[in-house]
Length: 217
Ligand code: URA
Image (cartoon, rainbow, N blue to C red; front, top):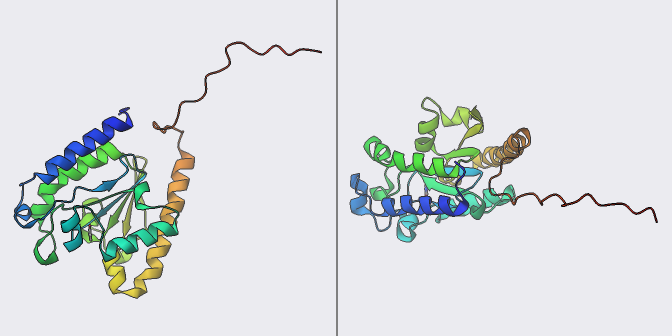
């Protein structure tokens, strides 16, 4: 639990290497590059999308196409960049013709996500779209529960629309932006309610060796 940042980075890189070599489901056959995930291993917010599209498959990075540009704009709205968060997907290889991932593919990939969550220990897990939402909100309907946090054991699970759905439907832009702003507020409230246990924070300065003798003159 108290591993250093370097140990967490090494553990994350080990998972990424496993994903790049993974053949646990049929999706590996069509991939150019697997997409393990990207960002800070000690991020406070973890985003979980659906699966790589064309550009992600080419580059091996999540959310680098049109949806990714929009996700970056949403992050900017709340004063963050993609370097401040961790972004991954429910499946790590591109489904052919961007079809929906199948249950067997999601299940094969799931242990990677669970291990990444254990390393990152995010305060908020924000799902982007219905496949990642289904992992944490099995009976949820996105139109009803988007932006409604579920708090469990000190962590917030937070369902969001998929950025691609918002790009297709401009009526969702405003609710999506409101959901992002609420997420930022929830994070601040959660942090304010917790004892400060940031294991990457610099240690406090040592106390002075001897009490200073105050001279009267
Ligand atoms: N859509 C996703 O769900 N994930 C990506 O990485 C890119 C687009």
